[in-house]
Image (tube, rainbow, N blue to C red):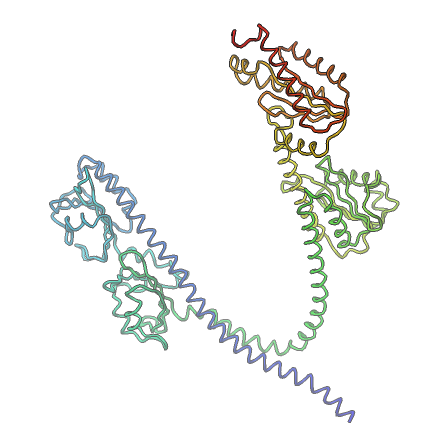
Length: 635
């Protein structure tokens, strides 16, 4: 019984292997069949795409040709005579003269001026009355005097709102066909242009002579296709589709795809031989059969290898997914961190979890207002230590001269590379530069005392990119904030900043607060007498003087020549003395200001201070202009 069980255990893998080999054999034949079907579908798709592309190209070229002949017709209309040699020289050198084209002018008496400037009798098939009423258009296939198939482009020559001649240009279809031979299926296919009304071929790159659509009915169609039904339903009327029939020249099936055009009921058709369509499929079939023998030999070893590799890949994928999720969480936290700085610490915390570091340090060195941010997994959030700041400074100096990451595995290397930093508590260190797109150093991201090296540099680079986006958003946000709250001329806070700060002061008034309202006297007269540039300079001087006087207190330019400032924790006498001295200094520079000050020991409403200061300012301004030396009316 035991031996039988052992035998059964030995046969089971063999039976499974045989079943798998049989399944592989069936799968190989199924794959070959599927490849052939895919190649057929690929051929149809490619023919369809090339037909659409060529159709668009033909329609575009026809329109361009009609535009050109219309432009040349206007040139003929502006000439003194249709037989002017200079006119014909321009026409001969124009882009109309291509594809073996011939240019001529049909006169109302139905005589024709040729390209040589000669006057001949009426051309065959040309009627001045019919052509002038048809306007700018393109003919179907015609036979010229030399017996060659051509198409003609017509454009009336209009002078004083009357058609005085018809400019026409004929293109040889044989030469056009010759130039279109390599446009289909990489030069292995053929292109046909068919007249939808008559079924005649305008272009045929497969045959030497132009034939008609009726000849397709004489060819044997492939199973599932009916050439007569195709001609009745789609070949001549609107529509597109595919027909497969036997080619007399190639002796094999020919894949024939047709597409309608918007020009003269023309139809575009493309064809390619079956040997070209399935060349790849047949080569693949031979390779698959040869390779199948090798598959039988390698199957068992491959099966064992796949089993072992799958287990390792599952473990690696789980780790990659976990890493990707943490990086995504870091990106989400950093996305709004330029406005919500509290998001920065949890982002650093997750970074520490990802790289298995006891401490993660980030320093936005390009932004002076941003301190060194440190996430210590063994401590609560707090200020960075002196060692952290010293380490950030040394790393900043390192990355200002190096682009590569900073990697250190032991304290001896750290002491050699970071002699200025205290490294007694650091076992290892990994740091990367956080740079902008142009390579400018935004900041530094570092991990201290990593437990292992699993993350690798790729993870650090992804994290560096996430923090660089945060720095970029912070830079843009700071710039926009500064632009939105700064007056461009004086550099002071603008009206928008004033309204925002005023709302805050209304909600939280402070004691011993003063409002200073300043207005320039004589700015209007200065602008009128010496120009606005002088007025701008006066505003800049006053703004600079207010900055020097008030120091860190907020100063706003709230109007053209009006300034306002809030002074906190001040006493009124000293403040008035400061502004008396300021008025004196500006007066020595021929600048006169009116200053109003509102002050309260306990401020109940900030608007009362503003109104008090504004009232005093207007009183002083009025006194200034009542002075005979400054009276505008006297001037």
